[in-house]
Image 1 (cartoon, rainbow, N blue to C red):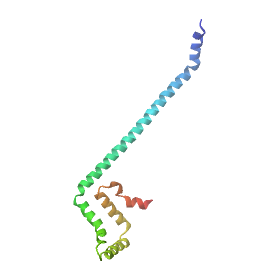
Image 2: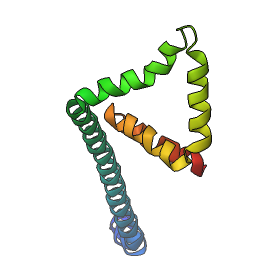
Image 3: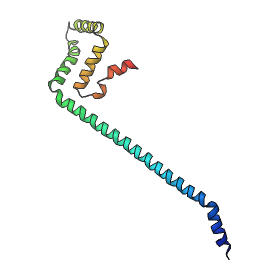
Image 4: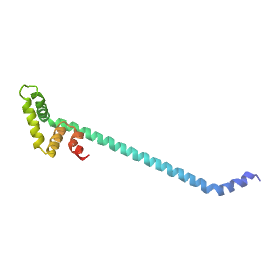
Length: 134
């Protein structure tokens, strides 16, 4: 009788449960790794989808803006141009002083958001509101 034929079944009897336990542990770890990988993949896919939707939103906003973006550009640039015309600086300064004193912050935020949305800048559409909350 060979000593391996005696030790083999005895070793299997003694260590068999440990080997099964190790195999189960490896299988469980592999499943956990696969689940973690799938979760990361799903999160990444959600981020990609969100970025695509936001890009589409901005494109649609620009398409719909039409004459509004041109009018807003003229209104925003008018005080700058008037500063180069002799005698107009006082009116520009007076206008901004009056606006700063008379218009509430929520109105300024709404105007800023309106301009941002008109140009399709979604990330800036609530910028004045976010800035106040910090």
